[in-house]
Image 1 (tube, rainbow, N blue to C red):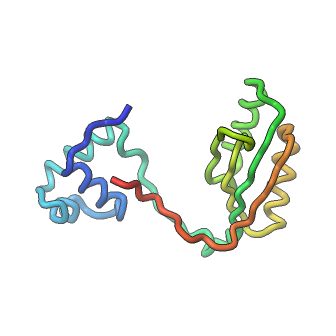
Image 2 (cartoon, rainbow, N blue to C red):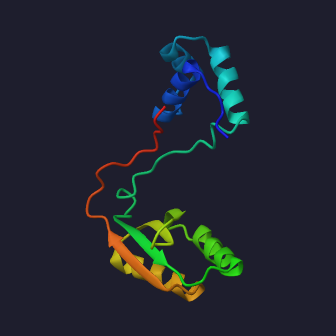
Length: 153
């Protein structure tokens, strides 16, 4: 269920999305408020689950993770036990940045970040040794055109 937020909350959230390392004083100045009300709103939005964990965004290429694959998975298995094992396997693999269950012909799509094609193959071999999968299609991203964590507020 969506949480009700007002325009000041949106301004604060926009500032946090841009740079969560800003001080409360900086955020308050930018949104036209004072420090205590901003802190109270941030605390409330954390309690409501609007604001989750805070983290940093790393540059994968600077860390040698130059290959991004989108992996399309079709399965003939739909039992709860298979699904639990599959999901546990995905959660344990640090290469899997995102995993989505889909409607349509493809059951799952994964976003996988690795060093190169050889590293992807090692990931693929490990995955299929853990769980039975009917069909896997890997698509190599040639260029990242847009990537953001900023939600439209």
